[in-house]
Image (cartoon, rainbow, N blue to C red; front, top):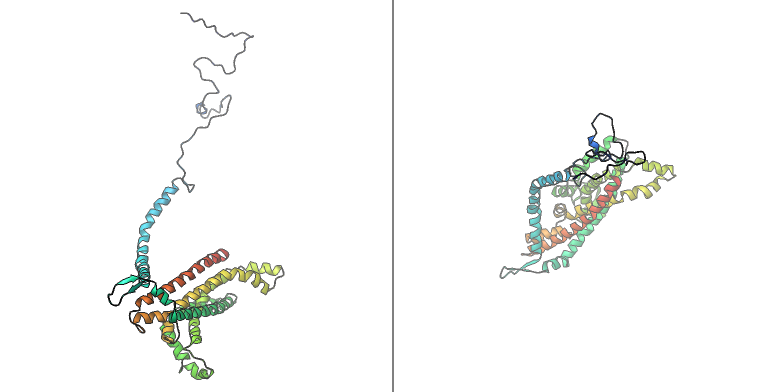
Length: 352
């Protein structure tokens, strides 16, 4: 059959479409950009070049290729390293803590020797002479913490502003040594110096003034011996964090030295000072050997009462009561830590 389709007119009166092309050829507009030979400098006649999509590696959540997988792998490799640490915590802290809590809420029947759950030990540790001992320890800790904070801060400020660099090294070294000189050696040193027949007592006749080392005042003096150096070492970094530019800016605005400390220095140092005071409170509250050797049971302190109950010096079979008193101390220590940690973070933010 013959093809009856007429060819398009080619005369001057017929319009030829711009995109028309001979059969079998590729239109210019539809030609891919990569079809142009490289280095010829020729570009497609019409239309924008179509970008060629390149295969890309998946981007992880940290913005780097494969970074999330590497980080997860690093975390998996860290676990075997910290297992001994957690095992140490479980054996040396978790086991004693669990035993203490179990014994504090357990009452043993003397006849049958069986134990039963009860709150008698906890209630007994918060009443009578044991409540007096807990109150005495809190009062002693508060007094020594307040005095150590004030005295230690003044000494540390004098060291920071001193023009002698060697003074700082001497004070820091002495503070590190004296802060760890406590317990029975410190008690014997104070007895030999300020006791009834002590050297200083006999030399200055302190016994005539009514002073007694074996009293609340004597305990405060003994505790300050190692708490003031500890406070000096603790507060020195905070005082170093005060910028000299702050004082210069305050002076350029017409502020006096007292106004600078009242409006700038003390507010910035307040978290560090409160944190140091809380640390001093915890140190004094947990101290036992110094008071036990120096005053014995003449002063009501919770640590001495715990030792007497465990040793059976007052009543036999009061071990669980001693565990209940220990639980009270742990609760107070946790409260101290709950106060100190936010203060330490705030101080780091200001002075870091």
